[in-house]
Length: 243
Image: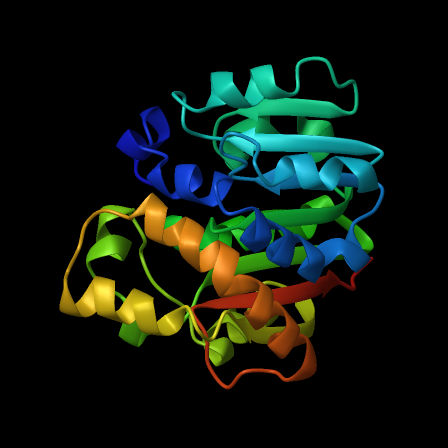
């Protein structure tokens, strides 16, 4: 992220996500089989998804670089002894807490984070060093560069990912890819229309709630049966296999 993004992040994406309960659960269930032990979520925002990881964690470290969001995150978990919030970039947190930097974690989670980081390979190299052998890298990112448009620019996305490109990035940074798949095939169409045709710079929370209530339950069932050939997002599970 750029320096100014660390000082302040609007959080509009996070506000909309917090209102889409079915969508949250759909994302979470992609990663539940791999959640265990000592875990970290990078770019935890205000803690919307972190609340879904606590039940699986012995320890949960939450990293959030935006100083305007961090107090909300900290206050949300102030009474939970399993949770340790950290304010700063991953590099900053590891400098302040060097014991976290080498073979300390069983899983690291990144939900809509990697696209905000210009040098994404550098961050994944750090994550690789942080994971125990057999530890999991759990990634959720926007997919299909052809969908990149006004909202991506508004939210500070450097890119949207192809399946092959995301796999290559993870393999080049030392991970074995367990699986990668497209996610939310039906969401690609409204995103394309709003982002590329209308060129909107604002998300509509009302429409997001309607999509969450009517479309997401159906899409979840369909995508359990088939792997879609494209989708608005990508889900990747990688594994650290070194010593």
